[in-house]
Image 1 (cartoon, helix red, strand yellow):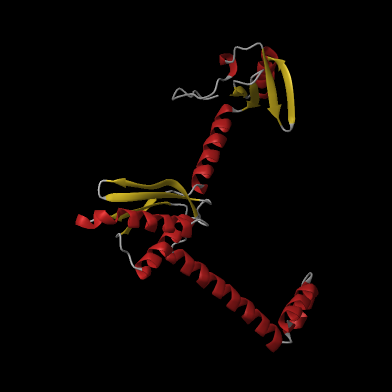
Image 2: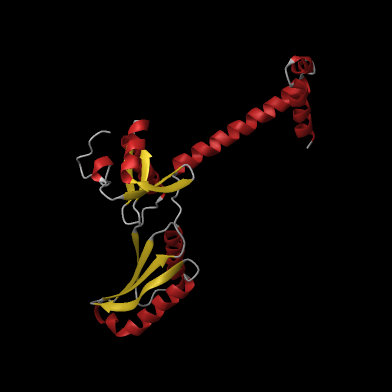
Amino acid sequence: MKNDKKGQQYRVNEQIRVREVRIVGEGESKVMPTRQALDLARQEGVDLVEISPNANPPVCRIIDYSKFLYQQKKRAKEMKAKQVKQEVKEIRFGPQTDDHDYNFKLKHAKEFLEEGNKVRAYVFFRGRSILFKEQGEVLLLRFASDLEEYGKVEQMPSLEGKKMFLYLSPKKAGVAKKSQQKMDRERREAEAKEAAEQQAETNIQEAPAANGLFANMKGGEDVLNKLRQKNQK
């Protein structure tokens, strides 16, 4: 076992000072004296690692500690990669926003929520337009209602200075958007694959002499029949 002096998260070997432990691994679970578990770990040339100290008795695994730490770091990295980075996107309105502008901003808000981002919508009251604050509140409530399928209200409209805010969070976990470059590359690869398959079918049709080549191959007759069936569809 390598020393893990930098912020060790788990008790290992002699650091485990309880009388008995539960050993888990490969679908098995059994309680035994800690001393016996340590002896088993030494016999296998690995370590006794406490993975659940608050259980009764504490749960341990007999495993190479370095390997165990590597598995934990790998799992944490995979979990982080699956998470979608959540941002707060802003949508700004005026108290007398027309329908065209409203629908344009509504469309963007839907996209933001579908991607897993939060939305902070607000109405900005310039000068004497603060007199229309009720109108701004109605606009934000309409906005929340139109987005009900995509997001849930975190905070109802509230006035802060010259701005009235509404906060929405996504109902579903977001899906990371692919870059345009990646989508173009995948499209080109799919087109190239399809072209290669079509060329292979054309070769079968235009070169009957090739049938003998397939027939001499191991399993060649099956390959030839599949290509013919696919071409007939």
